[in-house]
Image (tube, rainbow, N blue to C red):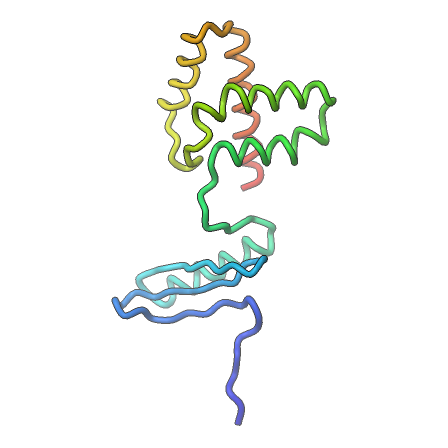
Length: 151
């Protein structure tokens, strides 16, 4: 009689010594992600949802998405193929010079409206014209809107 084994990258569920449950899921590229919950059923639901997300193309990377990474992905995947070269260069310059130095290291999930407002206030005190600040706001707005569409 042979023992049953799970398939490659199917995931596993175990109970931890502290009483909580953990599911481990293999990600593309050989990395693993752990999902935790109070009960085995809760963790199995999270594991199913993670498999669904992977099937739909949603990334499950363990590192948090920073504003700099979001803007870089947005420029490469959304802007570059759909606009002229000069427009892309202008957006890239706005991102590199105005946005990343101020808020690039912040996690996207933890940024607050107050921090975004502080970015615009810093740009205003540095002598930037109002239309330039408005254009920076539009670039950030388009990138965040695209991130919502990507899930």
